[in-house]
Length: 260
Image (cartoon, rainbow, N blue to C red; front, side, top):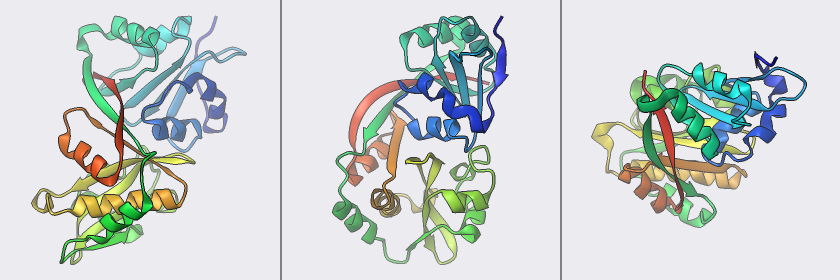
């Protein structure tokens, strides 16, 4: 009888066919599949038919939702978790197991196809007076958590700050020596990043997120990286910023949030 086994980073590309239907938060999915971070579980046996990917609070299910191990994978998810599924069969199974505890959170994914490098460069050049935009090196990365937000470089995604500087992408705006706004790759796969932008409250509505975000997105366009933008359905500032940069709304979907 099949049971559950952990999949080592070097083996995870074997799971890729089970996750081809996952279109949302794709950089996160691929970062785990490519062995950069996160964990993976799957059924034992000669043929892998069902799997779970985890990265920080994100959980992705893939493969055959009717497989006997599928329910066991869903049952072991606990704590504060955001569950993403790519089929009605998986959605029904997750809802059957976790029931009324689940909270559906609407999301909006944006398309990067219309992005124009010239437009992004114009926006990135419009830095408010008194601020400077620079790339994030190791010294600045060490200060991001205290200056802006601990959520900009998650240890579950980046084994070390040196790893982020080597593989990730990040730009920040500074007032003197203080970092007041930063745009980073929350996750990175071989061909894409998930974007995270934070600005300290006292410096919001100054155009800093636009300038820093445009700098990050332009860097991605120039280097052949897909800059993935995804936001809460009710996060209008994030949606307006995305469209200001040149993104267009592409699809609506939902997170299934399992509270702690």
